[in-house]
Image (cartoon, rainbow, N blue to C red; front, side):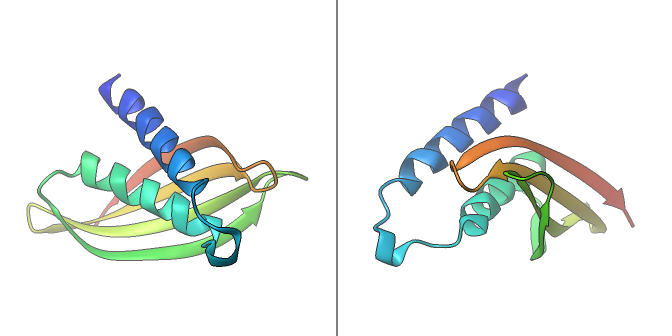
Length: 106
């Protein structure tokens, strides 16, 4: 429950700060969702080193919605863990839809 609340708060904060960016200097929207993914991974692995982060790309999931995929390499008690974060959103209306976090050991 705490994690869901944290995700909702983070998404709200990132969505509000994104509106303040001027149109000429606007960053690609995957960067905004990458910051959300990083925050969630850091919350799930407090005190652990995130040794690598990679944007894997975007997949179109419907006429209006896309899914951005991010992978993280985390050292958890000296063992490598791959964390895959998938974020669904609608770029046209700049709306966050959902997120999944999947862990792969080894």
